[in-house]
Length: 247
Image (cartoon, rainbow, N blue to C red; front, side, top):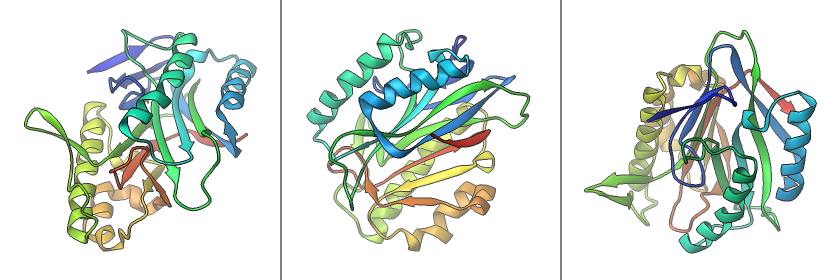
């Protein structure tokens, strides 16, 4: 279901409590991707988001996406505990719309050179713009599928080529549905990110690149990182933005 955020100038697909599934800027607006260099501890990052948007005369409601990094994958209970203060922060900013969190999110853990505390890698926000192509952000999706009325980890524990193929196909299918719901296409993507520690080279030419189509010409960024919950192996996200910024 598509929901409008009039104050933020974007549309989003309802997701779970801690993030929306996808966002797309409304006509007359475009999405900018602001990257922290180096990564910013969460408390510092929240304050910097406030200052940055204030400097641009943009409301906090313009915030439409966040990319987080955590020290290690959580248990499911630990993941819920981690999300509580994050959700509370967005509520204090009065970002909820129709009882839903509109902000897209990716949250992963580095496998090599892990960080000591949760940090923010980047955020997305809307600005007035006459840029014609649509701009959007897809939240990171792991290999979880709705099956027989329940939620299932696809090919759970199977990191063989066949297992990874099943996982990747599931993720691309879910992301494709989100794009379809927003009437968008992979070809518009300016960035496609893959998060995993297993060898996906056998799947590139046969599955991943054919699925993302023309976006493959802009390459795929591979992050040697894991999804934020134990038992998951892969995650993929994507975006189409007006510009990239370094803060």
